[in-house]
Image (tube, rainbow, N blue to C red):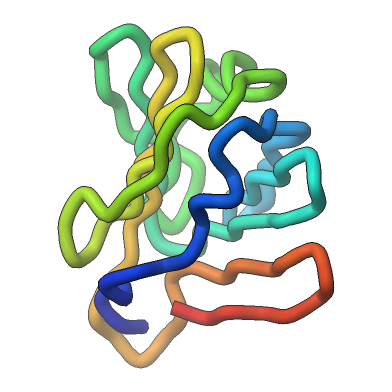
Length: 119
């Protein structure tokens, strides 16, 4: 929907493990141990040991590497640029969640208290 805000207030995820990666027909969802869920509706890339690949782009391109995400701990989270949220995990795993400038939402963040942020 929009570019990423300058500060996305997700530093609380550092130290948390990924509990679940959900593969839906039109989205990807990443759930963390304290209940926060990030839903990617536009595009998701993954990086394993330095090799980046496209996993989801409006539809699933590949799910073969998703198995490497659960139980990994968040070591860092930042805006890679105005359109890409980068989540670094243990074990050489990195998630790149993309947004786009359009009339539709690209990323939904549901916090553990139920509040929803739409980007």
